[in-house]
Length: 440
Image 1 (cartoon, rainbow, N blue to C red):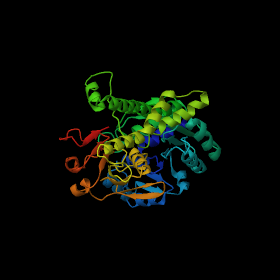
Image 2 (cartoon, rainbow, N blue to C red):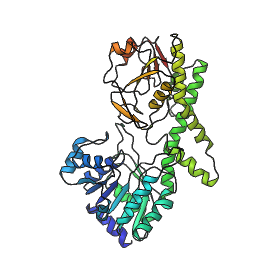
Image 3 (cartoon, rainbow, N blue to C red):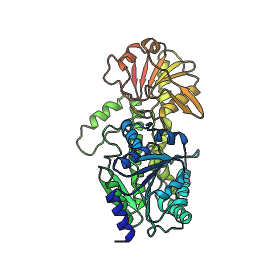
Image 4 (cartoon, rainbow, N blue to C red):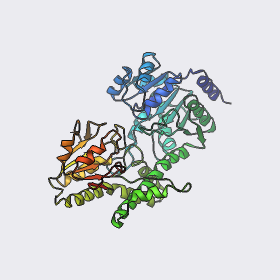
């Protein structure tokens, strides 16, 4: 066993390792909290002064973090945050948990990973560990992060420090699986690095830690997880459009199919894809595949379906209004839900916002209500939602469009008072009568 491996394993075992987490968002803050709860002194790094301030004051802003946990850890001095990357010099283990969005051309924007790596490299010390957790294309860790760290630190990967990739698995709002109990995948450069990084996660998490042979395998594994869901949701969205033409309920079809105890997993249609992973990650793979002269035709076809779902929903809304002898233009429409999934306050890549944009293009008059999101920002503009909905308010709209299946909405009241409802999530499936309800 090498000296570096032995020293790091001893630090992990004795909880003498200081942990750094770069990026205090949906992935980074829950990870930092779990590291600190496990007994490791933890420093969070973020370029946003407001996040640094909130963490240091013990104020939580992430749904998957228990408010009291954060407060107690900060008060105990186990967890702190800073915008000063020079404190990397005090860190033995650093996880990079920064955003990896798409640019305006739907290509990977890895600028946050690149800049974070450059900042870490300035202060990286010998016998330390760097792990990238941000979802990205296969090859990022070895082709981008490794050269930056080596050049900026004058240290050699595998000899002076360990480098690996362990994809985040965060599902906001999931009541069963959190950071603590979700299994982790680890792939690193060299077997020693893999074992040490895996040992670190095992010291913190309750979920299994699965070791793979390289960072590229771990990077591809993460892309596969989300592409699998992307394609299957694309399939049912396409079937939803076909079933509508055929006069068949796609929801009833899915319910029947899922009675099969093997070989089928139920996925459900909706107004499009949202969130921080599923709509974006397949683009990373498609982009990287072109380097090898390969076109991911199934992925690209699925993305085309998702991209047109908001427009399809507006088309269906127009047909519902036509039945009332009304046009989309100047129609009063209430959109229920702008979060990308039920019972969370996250509207990243939310298809509901795309639906609103498409309705506004048709000059419809739009209000929205979301009990989790009182306002949202879009293209630099702040959009305010209704603070509450009443029977009288619902009755004043020509159409109610349900785009998020929040559980804290009185759907019986909606049905009783709405002139017409277009339910894109089938959230009203058990509500009767249904004469004024149409389902995607």
